[in-house]
Amino acid sequence: MGRIETAAGIPAGTHAAAGPDGAAPRGHLARLPWTAFSIIVVLVVVAVFAPLIAPHSATEQSLPDKLRPPAWQAGGSATHLLGTDLLGRDVLSRLVYGARVSLVVALSALVAGGGVGLALGILAGYVGGRLDGLIMRTVDATLTFPTILIALLLTVSLGQGLRTIVIAVTLIIWARFARIVRGEVLAVKTRDFVALARVHGCSHLRIMAVHIVPNVMNTFMVLLTLHIGFVIIVEASLSFLGAGIAPPTPSWGQMVADGRNHIASGWWLSVVPGTAILLVVLAFNLFGDWLRDWLDPRLRQV
Amino acid sequence: MSLLDVRDLHTQLHTRWGLVRAVDGVSFSLIAGETLGLVGESGSGKTMTALSILRLLPPETGRVVRGQVLLDGEDVLVKSEREMRAVRGRRISMILQDPQTSLNPVFTAGDQLVEALRLRPAAPTGQSLRQRAEDALRRVRVSAPEQRMRDYPHQMSGGMKQRVVGAIALAGEPHVLIADEPTTALDATIQLQYLTLLKEIQERTGLAMLFITHDFGIVARMCDRVAVMYAGRIVESGPVRAIFRAPGHPYTEALLASVPRMDASIERLPSIEGQPPALHRLPEGCRFAPRCGYADDRCRREYPPAFPVGPAHDASCWRVEPSRPSR
Image (cartoon, rainbow over all chains, first blue to last red; front, side, top):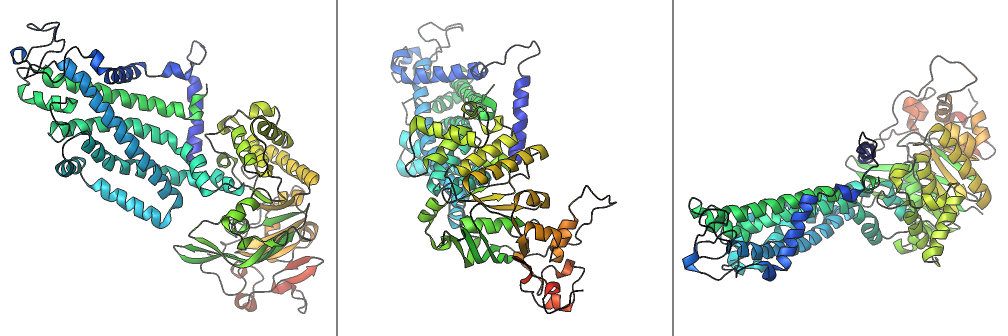
């Protein structure tokens, strides 16, 4: 009830956003965070068309060209726009291919972990009782393990690779989704429309699918976008620790790690991939903010 | 024959304080076109009675332990959940108190109405389903239904929402409608409109209504008969006029006295002293005895049976025991 009342206050604020000049209220697309959105589009395009975009091979070494600075610095050249690393590989090309790793890991882990978390969260919240206890204690247990530790253990047992990272991240994030979704479901299911749906003859399954899911979607989508950043960082951390993507396949975290010992002589080795991580995570978070508002019918209409 | 016949209904709730007898032997019946008011304080078991009839008690905690709920002579308490789904909405439906939460905020009014209509057997599809939904809105006196169909709940006023809720509840053309304080959350003017609308629909369709309320003003306007509940039991039942004229139970008397009147000027509204008993620790005898000005030893010892005090008018109070000279 309290939720509704606070929510009811928001449209008033939205109308106020029309501006003092009396201009017509802008549509929701105008409020799209264009910077963040552009970064995401660039990331996706780059990841998909990596072979077409990368000027060089990402793995081919050329020792004579090692540690070339970026083009705009003294000693840099246009052939290697962002310079080269210790083994003479083109940093820009590695960054481009690294985007693939980040995106693939983020998407697969989120689809798997988010999906499992959503399903279990809804079941736990809606059914309640023993099932709720069982699922939520499993969530608690999962959340007590340090993220990196789980991932490292899995690497040891499953071996290094993309698959291991995806499994590790899935195992970690499903619990975060399940916990938050369950809380939302607990609030939604006490509302009268759920009881009334049963009065007009809905089955439990239908109520969960038709009435509960759309009401937690909003929260779920925001969690999803927030966790894209989280997953990219976990992947980067694991690769940084050497437990992630096996070299020579480039990954952003690994690139940061590689450059760490040469920060004085080749600052771009760590700073370039680090900046990429920063921008992408920031972009997804901003996008998530916008998505939350857009998904709320109370805020969408203007 | 009565449409709905509730016999000796007992519902228990398992709470952290122990077993609560929320409904403790409630019986009443409803015939077509009739409205029965179920009146009582908060926590007297009105809503639990309604939920027991619909078999919508909170799972895990609530359970009907005894009694029958005969709908057209069929006991709904022994039906399977699957069979219940065909009963709810089509033969018996419900409107709840708060229109703010009775509609799903993420769907338009039209979508929700269409969903309710679609769950009916032999439902049409597509365009004619939307047509039916518009008709349903028209029946609850919603103006410009084509436009309202596209509105989200937050775009509608409370009264409008409650009308949509009503349209959804009546979509399956039920024979019995349980209205659980449907106007409590509405403005006074809208309240009257809504009550008139319900009355009008009832006259047209012969709907039997179980009207749950704590407002005797609404009872006077809406109901043919009243059942007054106190601590899980019906303490008095009878025709509205008879109860207003001569309440047989001190609790009814006190409830009536606490309704403000326009024709008498009073300094202070009388109120009923004390609290209703905690349902997990009920007093032994009459449950109203601790708050009753007339209570004697016998009241505190023995629960009074229902004594007739007039035609079709019963009260559970020792004071109206026929053999006993009234004081």
